[in-house]
Amino acid sequence: MAWLLVQLKLRLLRNALRASTGAKVAFILSTIAAALVAVGVFVLLAALRGHAAAVDLTTVIFTVFAFGWLILPLIVFGLDSTLDPATLALYPLRTRPLAVGLLAASAAGAWPLANVLGLLGATVGLAHGALGLLVAVLAVLLQVLFCITLARFVTTALAGLLRSRRGRDLAALLIIPIFALYEGFTQVVPKLTAEHKLTAASFAGVDSWLRWLPPGLAAHAIQDASDGHPGAAGLRLALLAAVIVALGWLWIRALGRALVTADTSTQPAAVRGKGGRPGRAGRSVGAGWLGKDSRASTGLPFARYGLTGTVAARFWLYQRRDPSSFIIWAITAVIMAVVSISTIRTPHYFSALFTSALFGGVFVGIFHANSIGMAGPGFGLDAMALAGRRALRAWFCGLDLALALIAVPLLALISFSLAAVAGHPADGFFGLATDLAGIGAGLALADVFSVSLAYPAEKRPGSPTPRAAGGYTGRSIAATFCTLFAAALLVSPVVVVAVLTRHDSPDTWRSALVLCAACYGFALAWAGVRIAATLAEPKVPELYQIAARSKL
Image 1 (cartoon, rainbow, N blue to C red):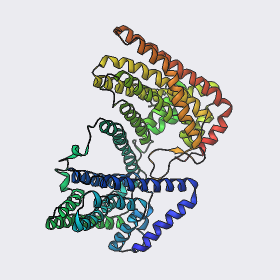
Image 2: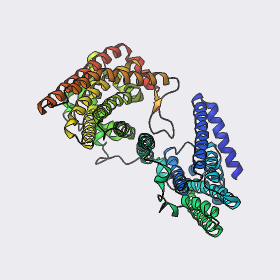
Image 3: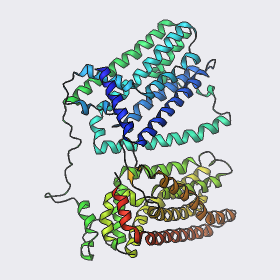
Image 4: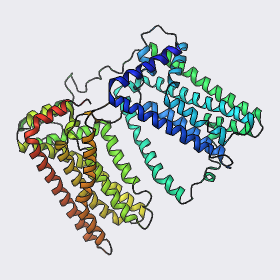
């Protein structure tokens, strides 16, 4: 059974590589990344030899790998069909042999091998003597087995939830804290290391409670064996093995339930509303496109204000209900905080405040620079109502209005928060002025590139956000870099004025600067609307064909 499922996984992988060039590129990049992780972790662990905090750092690294195996499978659930019990529920398979086979299939691949090879660096950095070397090898193998078993137990127990819409949304939202931790790590750790504030000795004693977790048991078993305490090392390895056996037993029980439980995750949800009538949202979207009489009865906000209001109402609902929108706005907020985290408490906080606000406006434009492609086949309904330049201007105005309702308060809150952290809360008005100009520039560029560089988007299993379809990556990259440089150029007048007037400026001048920046941002956004409508008027059928090829 184990060899059969390993062959099945390898066959699925080979078929995926034959299916598209993108799969081949992704596989090659993933394999290279796994090799780099293996080499980097091995060198890092080996470099700990002789350090007083070697066991503490080894415990931390082992624990980080365990958390990676716990979280990442939830995000990429569905990429590996051999790990989803629903695909094997119809076969007459016994649970225990199936569990062993699934475990073997999980251990086959570049990343499990990279985990083993990387963590074997502990044989150099922590182990001493023949006994220490032997225990180190056993501890690493048990550590990797624990990680795989933990991942399989969690994904099997939550398979029904992850297969549902809400489960996929929850898994997609997990990328937000991961992205925040990654960005914070890349900003803070290099700075502290360069200032000699973060050394190996900084982790001394960090495993006061981590040592009792399974990864800590593995690391301290190596330390005990190297110090000549084979009994303590054997006891720790026995405890780790007992935890793995307990997890395996829980996994087998969860697998058994999953194989005999009906999958209700794909059944349609009950329609809200009384008396079997359609829900309020379902009626109001269509009603907004009708005449004045029907606009008054709609439940959507802004829908009574003509075509612009109806488009704004619909896109507002999309922003509230689509997890991808939450991810985009959260990533924008994280980027604004991260780009200033290393200098916000220094005398150069003013430049950090402007940089943060500029990046906020830039990423508002970057993330929405393909609005038509992201609309998908549903853009066909819009296209039937977009007859003429005036209707197109209303469509882009409604889109910008919905985005601005989120972008303005979000970016303003972050700018004032950063100014408060810097100890100069009043300077938040300068950040707000840059925010308003940046949002206007970002929305203008997003509208223009949504027409001139439109491309179909697709959402693949395991990917939390849509991306450019095959063959259109160049357009996505071009829109990103053009937005970055053009937005910086358009916002620069506001930054220059703010820098020249920051000293001894009265509160009235700050208010006037914010008002002028708001008008300037509005003028930029309106110019972008008019340019986009002019470009789109002769291209509506072509734009619909692009949107129809999106797979969302």
